[in-house]
Length: 67
Image (cartoon, rainbow, N blue to C red; front, side, top):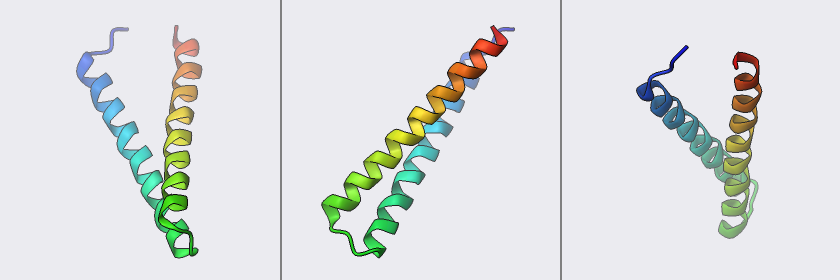
């Protein structure tokens, strides 16, 4: 089953946008909690990295099922 390049690019873009939104929400919640800007940025980076890591793990698990 061949997947077109356009679908892969769109899925990758969607994953990055969702990860960016998770980071932005984490930063906003940290600032509302009274954290400084560097602390909020650190929490945003951690949330962004966690979202991308989760997406990579799910992709690896699903690709092994459909291989």
